[in-house]
Image (cartoon, rainbow, N blue to C red):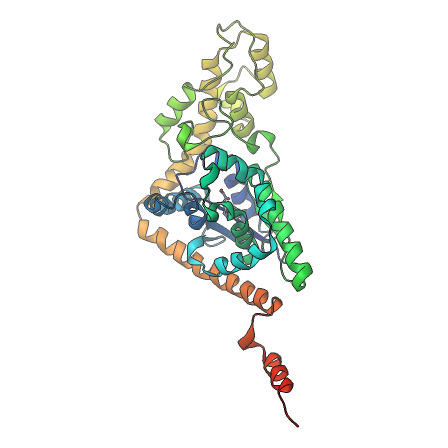
Length: 362
Ligand code: TRP
């Protein structure tokens, strides 16, 4: 079976280091592994509009930002197709048919949608499109016959929903769609990177993000201002490592050799953590180390972004080409779906003959 990746992001802002360790970094590795026959990376503007209907300019502006972040991280347009969701109308046809296979009760149980509804204080005013976006996401995934979906942990319920839709579709209409697998990062710290303020998640509205496009100075300032263990007041106080965002970031970003380069008194993260727990290790020292670790990872990304920013029309060309190529694949899947669902009237010569037979007078 062909190995196909599909993944994507909503263009509602620039991408941050949470996106990076949660999925982007892994996408680049998968892309370069040479194992996959096809890779699709979707800028999910239509999904972004499900809760930004009144804010189309925001979505429009952020498409190129997300594309720049992708390319800056090492997504290579020769190896991966970057596409814009709204331009592939086949996805919306698929969504409409899948809607018949999902109950309202099932959508109401989706934990990610539940928490998003709470966060947005939608309650009784949930847009139908937003409520149903897991179905549209199933269309995104199945349209490209994706076998693997590398995403952050919060997308797990979408994958479950997709797999259910695939099973239901195939059992009603015959084997047509492919059941995808989710691929999460194996490093636990990467699953959900906390905000710089210690909140569970990075989010633009909380102003607790480190963006991939932040300058070296911005990154340093954000790191030096990070929340740590509030009970670790004096250097000599014993400190808590678990849930301490500075250490979570180190777990997510630290690479071998970095102690030698930046903090040679320690051999490894375990030694650093042990010292912090014991007391006698100040936050500033740990933060300075984290800053060096982060800068090492972010500097090449920032530099590549600067290069791509010089030729914005090229970015739109990449998007257009990727979208066109992706559309061909989606259109093939839609044809398969319509055949399976017996709504391919004009392509089905047997149907015409059969109907003619029915009315034949001998
Ligand atoms: N829901 C994803 C997010 O919020 C974006 C997305 C849309 C997506 N369609 C997708 C992710 C298909 C993976 C596969 O970031």
